[in-house]
Structures are given as C-alpha cells and as structure tokens.
Image 1 (spheres, rainbow, N blue to C red):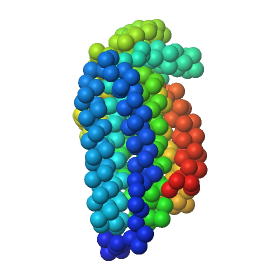
Image 2 (image 1 turned 90 degrees about the vertical axis):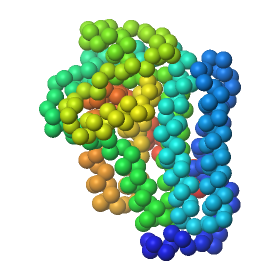
Image 3 (image 1 turned 60 degrees about the horizontal axis):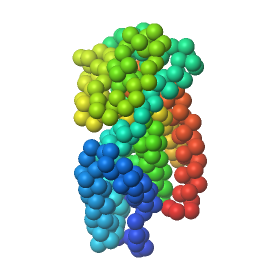
Length: 318
C-alpha cells in the first residue's frame, strides 16, 4: 500500500457505524441492562454508566472525524479506538461478575477429574528453568503484539478484508466478555490463594462463595523473577488484572482466531510468524497460573465456533 492511499478520500464512504462498532455497542447495551438490574449490588454503578457514556461519545467523535475526512487512516483510528478500549472493558467484567457466587471449585473439580491433579499448580514447579520461564512469559506477553500484527497485515496488504477482520476480532472479544460476565471463574492464581495452596495440593477444592466480592489478591506469578519478560507480564498483571475471565481462555481463543485469519489470508509467512508464539501462549496460560488446563481446551473449542459464526455473519453485515 502506498502511503498516499492512507489519505486518499474514499469515493463511497460508509455513512453509519461499522459492524465492529455495532458489536461493541451491543455489548455496551447488554452490560448496561445488567448494571440497571443489579444497580444496588454493584460497588460503583454510576462510574460504570459514565464510562459507557464516554465510550459512546468517543466512538461517535471518531465517526464524525471519518465523515469529514473519509479515508483509510481515519477508518484505522476508528478500529484502533475499539481495540484500545478492550483494556477498559476487561476489568469491567469483574465489576459485574463479582456479585455472583464464584464457580472456581466447579472448574478446578473438572480439572481434577480429567487430569487427577492440578496442572497449573505443578507445571511451574516441575520446570523452573529460567530460560523456560522466560519463554513462557514471552509467549504470554506476545498477546497484544500478535493482535496488532494481524490487524496491521490486513490493513496494509488486504484492506478489502480489513473491516471483516476488525469485526471478527472485536466481536470475538465481546462474546468472550459476555461469558466472563455471566461465568465468574477467576483462575488458579486467585482461587488457589483463596482456597489455600496446601488444600489444593491435597485435592480439596472448597466452594469460596462470594469471596471475590471483596477480595482481589492473587498468588505471585511463578517463574524466574529477574527475567525481562517475567517483569513485563508481572507489570501488566499489576496494572489491569482482576479475578475474572478464566473460562474459556480468551488468550488462547483469540490467538487461535488469529491463526485462522492468517490461514484465511493464505500467507505462510504470517502463519509461521504466529505459530511459535501461539504454542508458547497455550502453554504459558497454565504455567503462569492464569488458567486451568481445561480453560485452554475451552479456548480452542470456543475459537473455532466463534470464528465460524462471525465469518458467516461478516459476509452479511460487513
């Protein structure tokens, strides 16, 4: 793509909101209704509502910029805004699901039945090598760069499908967030601490009820603490992680969808660039105790289902 095409005025600019923006707005309305219904149980419902107002205002503002200057660059700004806002939507899921009884004992129980142990508890203990630790944290830290890489590839080299990819990715995130809101599973790093690591090691998986309505403490991330990528993951965890969003693993789900998009593009270089980080990602989610192993399996299954549905819908609405 020549640089001048970024500023080239489109002959038939899109008039309304795009499909990827409607996906975000649908999630916004869904969660707004939940906030209204559960208003008295939430800790800061007013701030949550005001945050949604700001999302609408920001979306409409960039729509207005695009209408004044309808080109590829301003369209990219519209997509970039919604991608950036994912970091706001993610912790917001915790503000709603914390009012529901925690279900970690159920999913940790499934884990115990399937593997006869807790892989997330044992993985980092069995392999504590600093190099392996850094590889695991590199895989986990690659999550957003991989998303940016696929978005950039389609924007720069396959712009005719750029809006389809934006819709598939953003709608996928919104669907995962719906699940996280309605399914309060925090993952090993939170549940193991709340239940007691010794209890977990003995196979005792207590029901902790509404513990996370008032607590958000987690275990220290396992691995080589002096590692660069360890520090990257730990800093990101401290900045935005909450006891939410364990099942299914959206990290695994979204990166699986990225692989499917690379396969759709028939671009071997892109596929091979993603693949090693994808493998590391799937392992890392369990290694750093962000997810149970069944969350990874759930990520695989949900990714193929979501991709198939959204790819079909993109033919009709994008």
